[in-house]
Amino acid sequence: MCLAIPAKIIRTSGSQALADMSGVRRPVDVRFLENVKKGDYVLVHAGFAIEKIDPKEARETLKLLKSVSFE
Image (cartoon, rainbow, N blue to C red):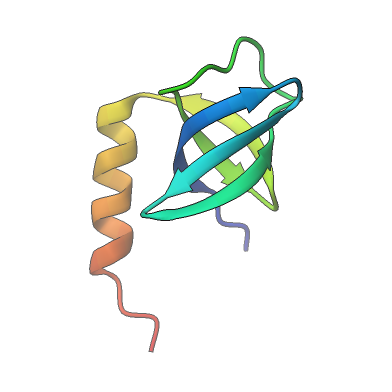
């Protein structure tokens, strides 16, 4: 099973970006997407941004993920 996490782009530099995932900032490769800019929300899988998503959808998905217990 694969899982992609919503993340907000904080800054970009070429094919690299810094993304915020629920308060955790990580480098993300954005080479598979066009015109990624600061403030965009993307789905991140294995360190790669694989799709741009609507901010409302990102917030709803993050809310659902926070409500799931992984114990």
